[in-house]
Length: 137
Image 1 (cartoon, rainbow, N blue to C red):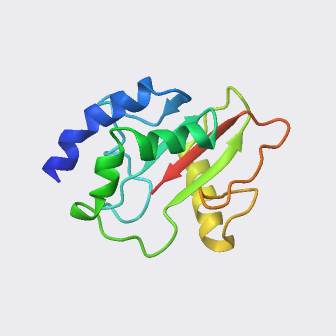
Image 2: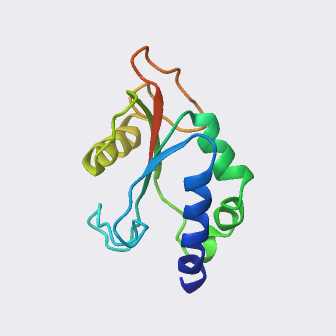
């Protein structure tokens, strides 16, 4: 895990400076590794807000984040269920951790819907929504 932890500061700084980035969950340490969102203490949570699914996807797959994403099997077990949920939020709204957990659990139970979806099936934004929230846990 030392290699993963060493990459956090760099990858988070790149996210913060990326086109379309709005907000990310973090503690005073600058990351969310100490946030306990699930019963299993080995599960890390990542939660952020982006202007659109496209800007999040560009960061995830076309930036310095791509290498750690590709190498994630070095540090993490393969998830047995969906571990990502995207959803639309109104401009200015900062989602809570509980909201993120609820969306992820909903996607796990119901698959991709307007309420919670993945990159594989992005639903259009409702009229009142202007930003995309994401939780990964």
